[in-house]
Image (cartoon, rainbow, N blue to C red; front, side, top):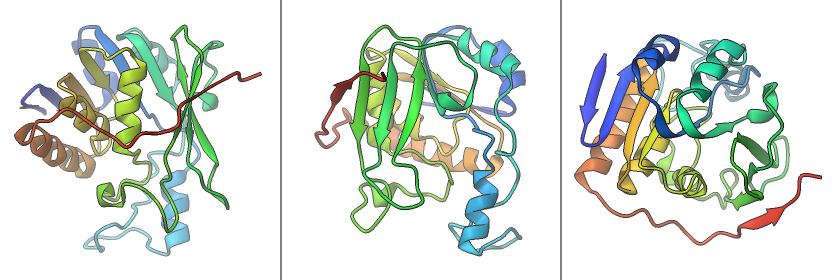
Length: 229
C-alpha cells in the first residue's frame, strides 16, 4: 500500500520488495533491526507479553528483531542513497568508516550508554547528547510505544549531519520519527514499514507535521568532535 501525505510518500510493505521501485535519493537515514531480540526482551521485562486488546504502550513480542539485516538487503539499501546513516552499524559487517555518529544517552544502569551509527561520510566522528530514559528524560511527549523509537531531535541532527539532503529515505520507518523531522525541516521523505500498527502511527504523526509545517528547532546540544581510536 502506498500513501502520499504532503512531501512524504509512505509504503506499507517489506522493504526488500519496495526498494527496487524507488529511485536513488540524497540520503538514507535508518535504524534497522539489530538482531538482539529487543522486542521480546522489553516485553518480558515489562511483564506485558502479547495479546489482543492489550493496553496502550504494550510491547508486542513479534520476533521482528530476532535476526539482523542480511547482507543482500544492506547492499540494496546502500545503493539507494548518496549519504548513508545506519543506526546500529556496529552490529553489521560494514566497511570501515571515518565518520561514526554517536548518540550519548546520558544514562547509567542496564541501558547502553551510547548508540552508534555507521556512515559513508568523510568527516570527523560526531556526538549528540540527549537523555532518553530516566526521570529527567527529554522528549517524553514523543513516546508512542515503539520499542526502538529514536528522539525527534536526534533524527533532525542526523539530517543536518548528512548536509541537509533534499530527499530522505527510511526503509525501516517504524513510527515515523525520521519522516516527521524531514517534514518539519522542509524536506521530502520516503518511508517503508511492514508492521501495520507502526505504519498507522507514522501516517498520523506525519499528517500532523504536514498540517503544522515549521522549521525544526531543537534544544542546543553539545556536539563533540572525537576520534574512535
